[in-house]
Length: 351
Image 1 (cartoon, rainbow, N blue to C red):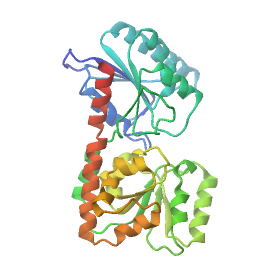
Image 2: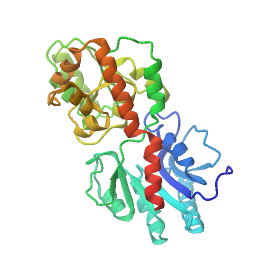
Image 3: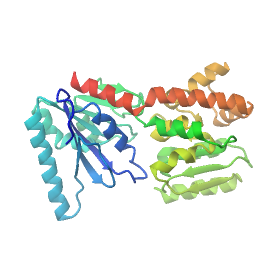
């Protein structure tokens, strides 16, 4: 491990995947790198480990089960985590990133050792295991009210945690002066409510629409295709891209649709940072992307119909839209930068 300031606490971090080539969870590496600036050493215990070049003070252990050999590794590395916490319990904190199962085990042992631990969770799915994890963890973190599907006084609302620089830079450096169309990025799943957008649009709506992501539910995908054909929409589906490709992909689109009801997808934050105007009925999304301030600046109430939102910005000229895109990108960066989010978590867990 690298030479760092020994006055800093150590951090043990559990997550689902540590892989720069992941099309879903590559952004988790940004959290690790950000935490490494505040920590003496960071020990990452990840369900799956792929390609990564970690900072000098970061060490990574894989937990993935499956085969007998991998199950042995799972037990070995989890008990090594318990050993590390026992050894460093006066100078260590623990953080679980979207990994509520690890709060239960080995987290129950950390609780017995009196070591503070926090859980970040931002997903609509509620389960008994999440309820148990929420009771064990000392602090709970999420992006916005309702994004953590369990009520608790332990919850802190911090915005999302995104490496904003990549998306803002792509926006500023883009040579595409004319953006068009509506995009949505993420798994093709009923949880995304993509049909809400299609249902809101009139027959023969001309602008292109693209849903980018892996097809998680083939029946749902088929229903979207049928709806698009019925309304004669310019709808396409595109395969998921690597995380590094997303910034330059987003800057080609004028609008981004987010259909979640309460939770704030990381992808909508990235899109806003890349200058996409956000279409959404989700109040949390509109707040964290700065869209609520845009409507205030335009001196109108937030439209409760997506097509009306779209028409509001289509009526503006290109210069007016560009100014709005700049405002959205800057506001999103201030509210959702991974450095600020991880710093707030670190402070909460160390005091």
